[in-house]
Amino acid sequence: MPLSGPLYERVASAPPVPAGLPMVIVLTGFTDAGGAVARMQEFFHESLEPAPVVSFSSDVLLDYRARRPVISFQADHLAEYRPARLELSLAHDALGQPFVLLSGFEPDFAWEAFAETVVGLAEGLEVATVTWVHAIPMPVPHTRPLGTTVSGTRTELTEAHSVWKPRTQVPATVGHLLEYRFAQAGAAVAGFVLLVPHYLGDTEYPAAALAGLDSVSVATGLVFDVDDVLEENRAYLTKVDDQVGASEELTTMLQGLEARYDAYMAGSTLGQPIIHAGDLPSADELAAELERFLADRRSDDDRRGRI
Image (tube, rainbow, N blue to C red; front, side, top):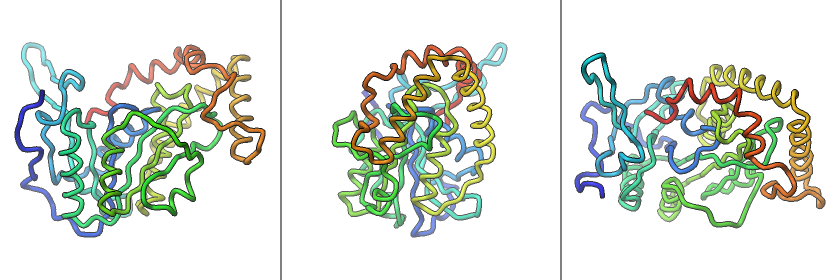
């Protein structure tokens, strides 16, 4: 069980936060298809250098057995101990526009207390909107635009950008709880679910992060310089396309996904909802084919989500 104690502390050197800013929430945890949220976290922290305003207590909120801290060993001594970070920060986009960023690992404990605290902090900062992003695997082709499902209180975003509107039950994340509590509090909140090709869900798929950043831009008006991520995605897609082109089975499967996707997006009464894979090959069958050349991306760079 977690220790009792303060849930967070304010950072003494924190800059003042203007009222009326958008809040962006990116928390890694239960599901992150394509490494979308982890790559977004990395982008925000490396490119924007956000200034922490509030630091949440890892001892209270995290299970270290599930989210091991990192420690550095230098020849004959331990040099650095880096526990996971969960922070509320002030960041600025490529145009210098400020926004509030909540990022880090999803809490393992005290969800209700955490949600109550975050809603209270947002109300105290008088944030204008709240936007969060997560990603799930779906039987869709990587050769088509990556779709989203949008929830929350901002109906204009839901109507414009939800390509799939299910009625279902899913295991919750703390992001879901935050959206639910923000909605109850009357906040302008939007949650974007990125629908990532299921056969790329276990890889680090740069297009998923790009779609997440685009979703944040649509919801907030923030602008991000994504040239590096675009270049990552071009190199990644070249590998995927080479592998698919060399396999008749993968080519046939991709064509089936494309046909089903196109029929669904066109509103055809003959097209089945894209959530139902039907007779399409499984994610495991595709993953086995792609594993050989995508494995080096995962093993060479295990830094995703370690903020």
